[in-house]
Image (cartoon, rainbow, N blue to C red):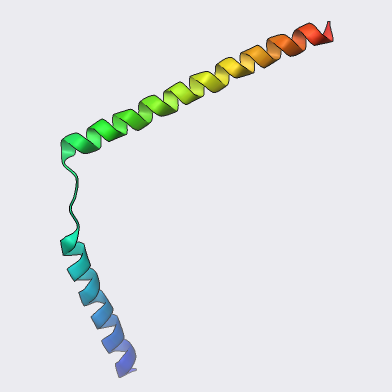
Length: 64
């Protein structure tokens, strides 16, 4: 039991040390990258929608 407790304490101490080494991005960078992701997702969604419209039109012509 004592070994397990010592192991947990050692683990938590190492987590604390590693956490202190993290370099967090600046707020400006986080906002810019978030906006870039949103724009990319929007463009991808629009392109999939346009491809869907094209396929519907082509299949509609084939069925006639």
